[in-house]
Length: 274
Ligand SMILES: Nc1ncnc2c1ncn2[C@@H]1O[C@H](COP(=O)(O)OP(=O)(O)O)[C@@H](O)[C@H]1O
Ligand SMILES: Cc1cn([C@H]2C[C@H](O)[C@@H](COP(=O)(O)O)O2)c(=O)[nH]c1=O
Image (tube, rainbow, N blue to C red; front, side, top):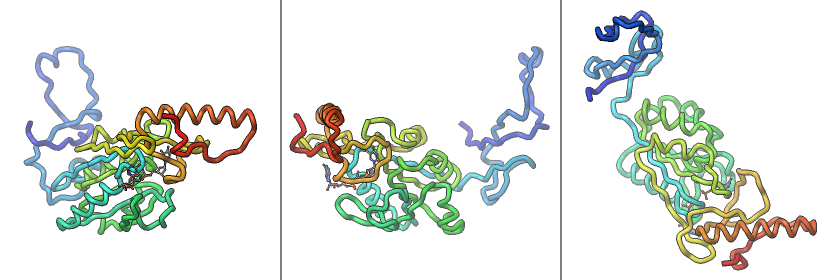
């Protein structure tokens, strides 16, 4: 339980093997060994390399960061919750920034907008790794809280969150879809659960019966995973109406294809079987 820093050892490291082991035939490659260094021997005012000529490790931050994940179907209030948390952090005097995917250009690139129309300025990016450079290295150092919306669209989500919280001391608040329209894991959102401090799953209202909605039903015949859209393309549904809706969509597809009738939108909420 001694607070410690893991440092990669240099190949010339000498260490003691317990007597019981040293008598046996034992081959250990020192370059693959991790050594625990007492925290007290670490000087936090050093920001560059920690140990040895081969080490590229950055000194750990003075305080470590946090990762909070908000998931749920579309219309569940993920963006609203993200904006609320960011606003609270900002009101508490912390420096904040929000990143969103530049794939969603529906409301203009430089703002995130909730389904209710609430807005906040943001950084539209294709990948998270470019954020530090684009935001400015000095400005990034001073940043306390980073919000990420539409997290399912970022392939480098895991690496970014890890680095931001573990090495750079940032609080990262991530909002995104846990599942796609077929309820498959979406992007890397579920991959960051093991490194998160908290996970919140929000629900919407089922568009058919008004009960809690856990899933997002796609109303069109498109089959690609990524398809930007709102209520024109998607509706939040409960389990019963997800299952019924998928059956209805599949049946409609078969009928339309057999009659070669082009149709963009299959479903309207009132016509869904209950
Ligand atoms: N079926 C629905 N269930 C819940 N909220 C809905 C629904 N349809 C529209 N909304 C509106 O959407 C808002 C949530 O928007 P938003 O935060 O952008 O959600 P998300 O980011 O999860 O898609 C709700 O406060 C509500 O006013
Ligand atoms: C289910 C599903 C959604 N999308 C897209 C549709 C929207 O542009 C976003 C989700 O936005 P929200 O803030 O959660 O409302 O994702 C998609 O591309 N594929 C899907 O399967």
